[in-house]
Image (tube, rainbow, N blue to C red; front, side, top):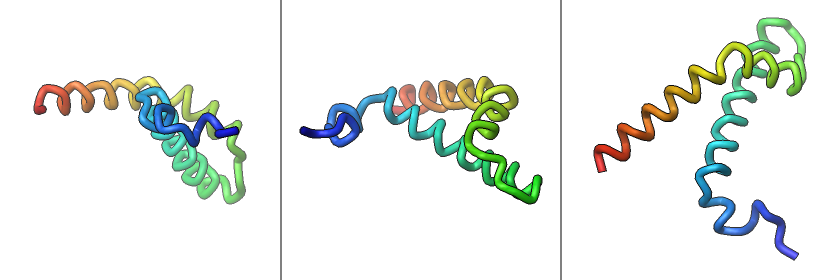
Length: 73
């Protein structure tokens, strides 16, 4: 049985691509904040901190970039 993330329609979906992009940003945030703290802060803490401090601005920027790309094509 194929796993859902191995199916082409899943990998090509906008929702999955957004999930991967968001996850990447959270992992970057985790790394930066862990460096500042001098220890691994963990994914859950990084996730919650990123959502509170950065998610809305990040999503607005992503949506703006997507509109710009769509208008250019």
